Amino acid sequence: IFGDRNVKSYNGVPISKNAHEQDFCSVNPKFVAVVAEQIGGGAFFVFRTDKVGGVDTGSCKISKHNGAVYDIRWNPFNDNLIGSACDDGLIRLWNITDEKGVEPNHSPVQTLKGHGKRVGGLQWHPSADNVLASWSYDNTVKLWNAETSHVISNLEGFKNQITDFDFNLDGSQMATTCKDKTLRIFDTHTGSVAIEGPGHNNMKVSRLRTLKSGLILTAGFSSMSSRCLRLYDPRNLSGILKEEAVDNANGSLFPYYDPDLNLLFLAGKGDANIKFYELENGDIFYLNQYMSGDAQRGLGMMPKRGLDSGINEIARAYKLNVAKKLVNVVPLKVPRQSKAFAEDLYPDTAGYQPALTAEEFAGGKNAPPKLVSFLELQSANATSKGFTATSAPEALTGQADPIGVNGEASAEIAALKKELDALKSEVTSVKQDLKERTDEVEGLRKENEELKGKLKASQEEIAELQKNGVDASQVGSD
View 1 (cartoon, rainbow, N blue to C red):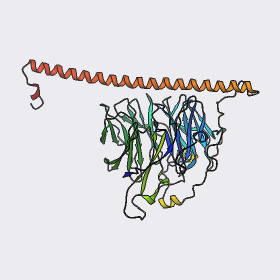
View 2: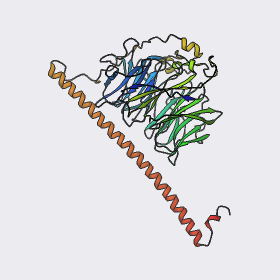
View 3: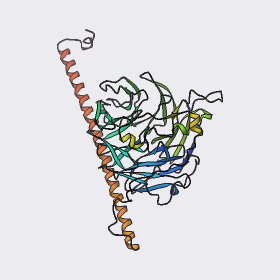
View 4: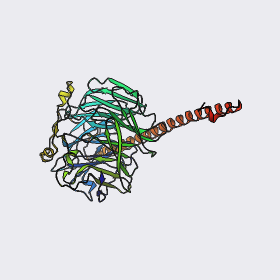
């Protein structure tokens, strides 16, 4: 696998510098979305994939958030619908049309309200239409019917901040990682814990992906704070099937999984490279890596349906470079001498058609994604698809304006009030980030104290042996 060196870029993009641990980028064949740096409130940009280069960020920014944006995700069955997770505890859904793109005063088509604290991450169901999962700092995961804004199920029992989640193939289960160092698998219909076990024994962020085989792959840190990959059997989480060392860097890992080829693309926050692994028969095989000179804040990966089979492109990464305000587009290819279609690189893959409706999933049904041939998928007419909310979206502020908007003075007061609320939200976000860092440092301090205790005990044991005339270096062999 080789990365194209002559990369194209979106230029002049002020990317969010928020410390929240998400990749801040989501991509589909039509659009690239990137979380924006903004003082007061939150925003994200939407760029067209066919117009790479200099961008007018003022005309493609969605700003109607009352706090920082923490995650954005395109709907896998609707390239015009994107969800955003926000510091104000709300999830907003936005419809981006092919013709108009981002419009002035763009408003959400749906608002999902139910979390008690800020929402940290989103993920769409792999086979059910308009079913969205969210995790929050209230230590819960919710599954929503995005059309009706109703909660389908609640996943609870976390003792610390959730760090990641992932559906299995048919969406019947969801695996989660958490800062309480526990790996859990939930039934997505009942919300009950099916099984749990020890995860990475480290306070740093770990993430996971559920493989096509059913095994769970985690990317995190060992007890000695080195980065590693692990495989777990979802039927028994008490042991590790396989552990693969990655390196000793400090940035959290972002795993991107290709279920069609059983490939893993691994990127680290602050790294300049992307590593490639093959996952087969319960093992992890390192292949090679793409190297660049620019550190990445996060990545967005193009879905399979947006790739170019004419150049044997098996993945496309959108690397966020905060310092240079760039989004670098990196095609990842498998070179072949033949120009013929490489069937082995493009097996049947998930298409645009969901296998279930949201109502069917809420009623207890499960189904794997509908697969279609890659050539059929490329020739499919992916026109703009509408979204109909069956409950009214929440107003921008979430409440009626007590002052009113009659006259210039009242309008100015309302604008100042909104700005003040946004600044308060930003202060709350900074305080929360500081608390998380403090908790992480405290966790590392405790681990250090434990290691010091073990070292001291070993030294005392050696001293006692030497005092008794025993050669400590021979104890192990005796």
